[in-house]
Amino acid sequence: MKIKTKSFLRIFAVFLAAVVGAFALSGAVSAFASADPNSRGSPVNGLCITNEISPAVISSADYHFTVEDFPLTYYDTLADLALCKSSVTAGYNIYNPTRSDITLNIAYPFIKLPSYAYNSTYQNDYKVSALSALHSATVGGKEAEVELRATLSVYYDYLDLYDDLARLMQSGERNALFAPTTPVTCYSYSVTLPDSYGTRYGEIEAPFPSFDSSVTALIFPAHRLDENANLGLSVLNGQSFNVYAVGQAIDPISWSGEDGVVCTLAGQSQTTVYDLFMSEYALSEISQSDWFNIVCDYVERSRRTVAGGGEFYNIESLSVGLGDLQLWYTYQVQIPAGGTVQTAVKSPVWPDIRDEGEFYDYTFNAPYVGDNDYSVPVNITVNSTHFVNYCPVGEFTRDGDEYTLSTSVMAGRDDSISFIMSDTNAPFVDGIPPRDPYENLGAYIALGLIIAGVVAAAVFLIVRAVKKRKNPPQQ
Image (cartoon, rainbow, N blue to C red; front, top):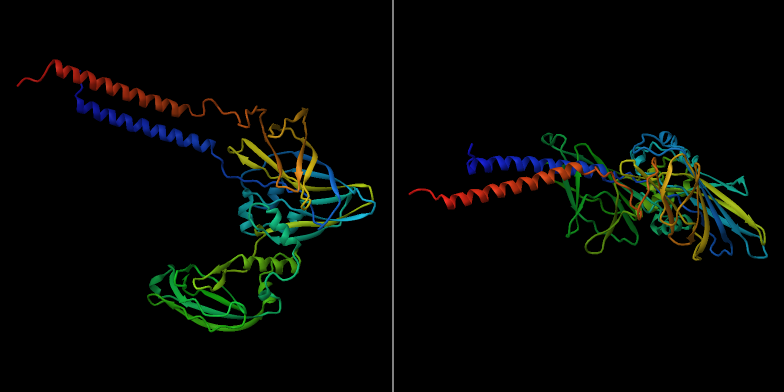
């Protein structure tokens, strides 16, 4: 049976499309199977010695990990997350080389919540007391007298040691205009939209007001700010919002709307910075002084500059959630002259989840000792029925369910140690995990079919051309 060229080309086109589709699907499935699911954990933070000048030296550290189980990729509540019974106790042996007794001020930063707990942090289901219950500290084997502290976290997902610690240590006012007794004028606005808008947003705008920023700070939401210093806001029917003038009052902002959208000044009231900043005080386990400073930093973070030199604080709400905070335990350690005292801190461990739960990456940070930096010998012990697969700084020695490694970290620097665990005793090569040799088999088969199809088409067309030359059509 003869196959015409056009018919062959149609058949080949269908074949090629099908195989390319299969190849793309195979590649997509393969990529999905090997992709990082973005289940970010959190490193365990090191101890911080916060004395401005301290002769004490951390002579050695012992990290004892107990990994009973691996975390899931999603948790609804902290109670569920706490069921993951894995933790680390970090013991620090601190030596006093002087001839006088010394007192060390210690700050221990809590581990940050992992990404697989984000849903509950957004809903503010996690309570400070529940999170603090997962952390503890001892001095000389006895429970330490700790104080729970809180600061606004510089970054949501990890500790910025220098900036976060600076906020913990900062005393005095964050901003002179945000002194607790500074008067605040609140301008309340209400919005009305035509019925034709339904649930759609309307737009209002206003020129940026003129005021002296040395005596007044404006706090209000703005969704848009153009090069001509015009403010824009998207609003719903019946919505209300506030503009706060901290310090000297201003002339009320006149907002104009599009297509029948009306924004009117509904009222004006007086308060103070303290009452304003404490109006959303929801986490009662945190001291009022810490909360006030947290809101000060939260507002300060929203500062925006306007064309022409003006500025304001672009913020819709003064509500701060637990996910925005860095929690700490602070306590003191007394060390006699020439003596050594061990202080230990316990924390949950929430590793990065990689390759859809095939591997778990645990990280802990070096202790912070101020401007001094020196090498600290570290002994790491991991007790687990699971397997330690890889550590970039050395190879663990296994004895039954116990893994041990002796190494060192640089105290006072951004140094850290990590190791990878899994359910299988899979060897790594140069830090790369083993792969299933059949992982991309479908893609390889599809590619082979494409190549075979192209070769078959080429052969067919060449043979066809040769036949035409030998047997030219009759005139």
